[in-house]
Length: 505
Image 1 (tube, rainbow, N blue to C red):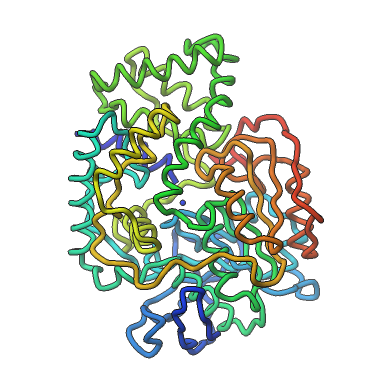
Image 2: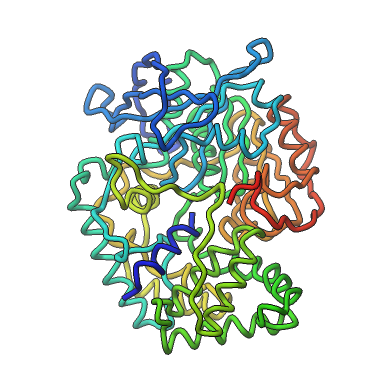
């Protein structure tokens, strides 16, 4: 059993009008309602941020039926004369609260010209935070992450399946089980358009990171004629977080690890190796040792691998990761993790304690039809352990989605080239969480609707995070003018960022 402190470290580190969808399911428009702006909840405040509550249909196929609440925020343009419209935003997850995200973007240094061009709109997506929240009634130690645990062999896949089945059953029996089938990316995209209508805007621009790139892709696919500029940073791929995407974590880890290995080798004080090759060998040694004998604090090999993966997200986490390795290598207490601009705050008020992981499960399990055969996961784990030995046997492992108590209520929205050419995708070459392969697949699915800008950087997220002038200038120009490069473009690397952006964390 993992100790609660070790469990908490994973949670702190991992952070993801009338319309006819391509699935053929038609929905009647919900009636827009004006938003009444006021103060924001205490945990979602920010300079100039206003909040409101919107009622949305639980099931868009029944627009006059049961409703849920959607918490919405606004950071108004400081210069109405320069205002173009609204910029809808999402901070990823899924399961991530985004109500305070407009204020966070300002704090991260979003250019004043962009903030003048738009009223920046945030929201807690359906099922999340201050919107009507969902729960699975999970305790902290029951399911620490929706990135599956590393499986050493077929027997450990079977063991993971037993735990996953229990979690899925708890979600199906929870106090919010009536909401369960309707917490989907497609419905969240419909909520976004309902916000647009409620604000009286003919069109809306969009900026999303990580999982938010999939939400934005679905949004502009369902509502191509009412989306203005669509900016996607660190893309999941056209299928969102499905079984194929989960398996990409093995590749993402392998792509990214050399950056950390180089850092550790350049800092011999940690005793992890004087060359990248020695650091990689140390990873295997530590994982194997902890597989055989977990530490006194509850760190086993699975947790070590998962925390290493989580701390590869950002360069500024490398020092913390090296200290964690050093402590585990020397048998000393592991330092507490720091927090940063992407950290998920503790639930407040009436928000269930497991809301982040529960809402994430609802979205990823509802969005696509996951394989249900345990043996298929055993085969995939074995294949990916060979192809991506450092983490492939985690990404390919089974999740509660294999036992989810509800079938998808509609087919996945098809991302295609149909629609205006108004999408810009920004992607780091060595992103562990949303690997380059997914961004390339999304670019191909969008066809000429999109342009792809890659940056020769490692880590997750780019705009406002890495200080890459090439990538940031292209992104800012697109948000200001709608102009994109004539063709896909590659940006060179910049020096590693040692501190969290905006001095946060």
